[in-house]
Image (cartoon, rainbow, N blue to C red; front, side, top):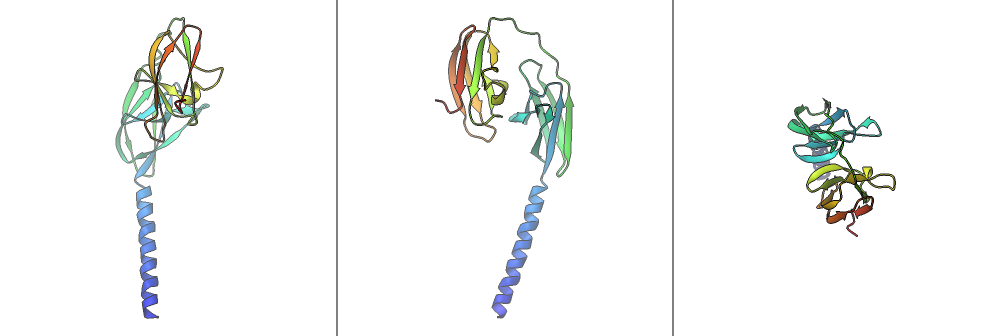
Length: 182
């Protein structure tokens, strides 16, 4: 009986320590919220894409490790903006940034569309961030680019290598890149 009582107490102490460790670990992150002139801006934390600034006008929040970070906002129609932020565990840091619009490009254009299961996967063209997959994935959407040869890469937010494909865009035609690579 005494052995079972000791085992019970050891198990109870172990569960309490595990729970306390989990709570402490959970408090090592804070939340980042970005408010900008364009919700389509991609949010990069220490050069890692985490997702769009907002979706349908609602700011998105991202869990970020506590500490100092570099936040970069990229949107192909605006100048890139970079700022520093300190994330405090258990708190929300809000970054407010106005982006300066670039001159509007002149056509003709080819249309690049994307298809795949992860709507917030980052879309890069020739190494430059252009937006997330959900912005270019239906018949009424697409990325307008001058005709030419491009390398398109789709990188899932969840991680992984993604898909890279060379494409030739032609004026007034649509080219589709599928995240599945098929």
